Amino acid sequence: MGAFQSVPDEVLLNKVCELIGESGSTNSYHVKKLLALRATCKSGHELVRRIIASKAICLHLDSFRAPGYLNVTEPREMPVSARVVEAAGRVFGPCCTRLYASGCSPERIAALEVFVSRTTRLLRLELELAAVSEEVLLRICRMLPQLEDLFGPKFTQTSEGTIRAISACCPNIRRATFSPLGRVFGDYSPAETWARYFPKLREFNLLGGRLWGYQPTRIEIIHECALVSQADSLDLDQCFITAAVIEAIVGTPLGDRISNFGSSGYDPEMRTNIEPAAFLAAARGFPKLEDVYIPRGSTMGGPGFYIDLSRAAPQIVYLEICDASTSDACVAAICRHLPLVNFTLTECRNLTSSIVESITGGQAARTLTHLTISYSAEESLRAVDMLRLVSGCPELHSLEWVCTADYHASAELDAPSQPCQAIHELLESRGGNNVCYAFGEHDPDWLDPNWIFESSPQ
Image 1 (cartoon, rainbow, N blue to C red):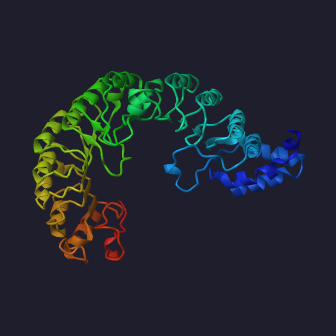
Image 2 (cartoon, one colour; image 1 turned 135 degrees about the vertical axis):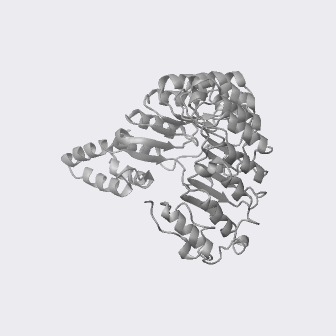
Image 3 (cartoon, rainbow, N blue to C red; image 1 turned 90 degrees about the vertical axis):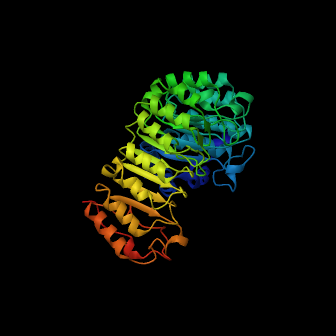
């Protein structure tokens, strides 16, 4: 130990400088300069101590940059030694607010504990690839009463008792994950197991199991969790959601806060399946609901659903539909009964150019300000149809129309045309801008620069 203490921190910390991610004005280059100043003399050491204490840094002591780290099946060793970890704690512990650490050897895990003991401002801790036992995890958490984000080890089972103990010593947790190992935590969602111990969690996560298509079934625990949750959004991605799940949330403080329903936007393949009755339960039971998203994996069954939806929640003003079975009649029912402000149709390939009349013939024509038609009605929708649509919606100033390259010619997008010019002038007169209504795909090989409009909102 005496020999270790005689090694200057500046020597041990060369590797740490490479691992510090940029945070504020502090990066590895600046840290190297600070360490050089620190080594000059006693006054330099004190000056650097004060400078570092005023910074907030993110420190990687993990295998974050290792190839294939997302698909690892076992813990990963730290890329730095235990000596470096302890030296990093002595120098950077007081200013570290985010720490990412892996580790397998007992020496490195012990050094990690020492590092954490020197922190005073740590808000985020990620240990997913670390071989940290639940006893060590609890000891670490007891040193971090201000912790907000905790991502526990993936390959070490964490018992419910340990999770409850963590919730007691870290009452400010807003985001958390724990290992899926073990029968209960592996088979059920956070909202059905441990989430009720952390009322400040930002999201109400209903995804459980190990595969997409998970159906929550522990209805009583979901209700119990909703009673204490301070979240304002539901994470339904990749789930199959029934009406029973939503009815368990209706009437709780969580249900009274929900304004968006359908997806939290983290499912790129849109595997979420929400049954129509669940949407209607949300419409009837969530008083602040105004934003509805119908994902690709869901099928609503026809215009009758949208009539029922509008009757249950006439306050809906934002609607995005990715249901492939959506018809022109569905769009007509929507626009006839809902005062939409923002309307998006994505990959609704059964639609035709008749959606122009479906939209302009309803009350939504008087309220729409933002419209997106993406990969929908491609076989029949043309620029002249879009001009009729824009003309029939007097408040519309933000338009995005996207279609695949095969349909550019028939849609009159291959070259500047009179309808496109008229659309441009009309939207520009209303304060439209290029971010919202570039036509077609953003592909320089075909898109004429004249149609990347550069007008600014008035």
